[in-house]
Image (cartoon, rainbow, N blue to C red):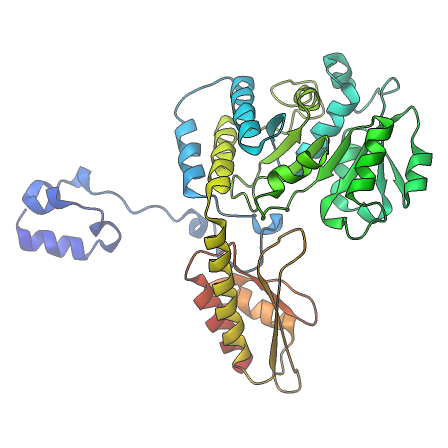
Length: 402
């Protein structure tokens, strides 16, 4: 192929021209050596992608995996391993990294709650595990929680056949404890709301020798939270894998006491006659979750935080340059503990509502997802790709000024 014809052909293939090396320029280009442009599957399906200025919500498909986790996922697709064996080995490695007795990868934090609850009730008895949630007359199947901690995710307890008992005070909790009490359940991001705080909650569990579980699904960063709550004394702790850890969205972690994690595994795949059979985690996800945790622990967290703060500042300063706009920078105390932004404005000067701004962001190009209520437009940047904050800032200003 003549050089001028090669250059002409490359100019017609902008997607692949950058991937064709010096071998092609030397005249060794063949039809087979030209990589095909990657298929745009979302476009084929008629799906719009978006810039995530909202956060790690499941309905927005959580996070984007780190490259290291993606590499591990791809690696695992090429060879077979036994599911129990990879769970054993990965669990050991996770426990070493996090500094807890035991760990296992689950199908999300919700799954971690269900499996952990089942394990508390069955113990290391496979026959009992097979009877959950139908025949539990000989099991301790009552779980006590504070009314202030009652949210939809607590349904995971009932999936395991637990009867939930609601209390408000320490006195009420101690009064509710009986021979059927199997576990005390705590919702981490509602710690400020309940009357029974961490120390008192754990004190009750130890006093009556009842296992305690803490749901920390969205509670990293900071990285220290990965080991904070097991170190504090919680017997089981649950995390989402597809939020701040940037692992597969369909994964979670169950951490804690070795006997209770082992018992939880009796209700998990590949066992087929258990409540957790449908909560399958494949070898690719198990390995990717391990690498996601490894990557997360080893990250430069100060640099990540500085990046998020600079992104929030850019968006906030750009929005505040519009007359009538007020910005409030904040960091949620527990869950989604990252730099965030509330944007509000004088609607006598800017005649558009926050819900209308969110719809304009969503329907524009590129589409942008944000959060907020009737009074504010809420922005986070920690799930954005670098550079997308400039697009978000520009679009918000354009909408507010138009």
